[in-house]
Length: 125
Image 1: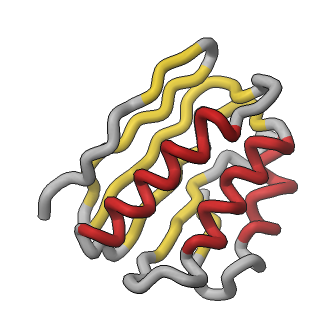
Image 2 (image 1 turned 45 degrees about the vertical axis):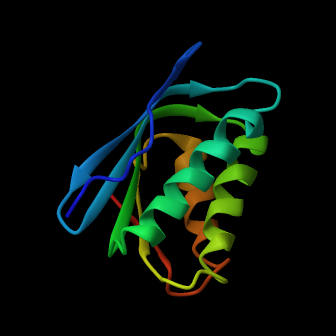
C-alpha cells in the first residue's frame, strides 16, 4: 500500500513526521509543542493525515507521542478535533495513541480522548 503523502514539519522545538507502517501509517511527534496557538500548525497537518488515511483506506494510523515531552491544552484540542473527524468519516480507520505513561500530560490527557468517539481510539504503551 502506498504511503500517505503528508510533508513532515520541523519548527522551533517540534518535529512531526509521517512514516509507513503495516496496514497504515505512524505520525511521530518529537519535542515540545508549547507555542501560543499550535492549531495553526497542527490542524492543517492533522486534517491532511486524516484525508490521506481515508483516501488510501488505511486500517490504522498510529500517533506516537512517546517523544513529545509537552503538549499544551490548545494542542490537545487539535488532537481532539482529529479524533472527532472519525465520527463522520466515510472510511473508518483506527487511531492508536502510543504514549509514555511517565510523561504527565500523556498520562492525564490521552485516555480522555478515547471517549470522544467510542471504539475509534486506543491508548497503548
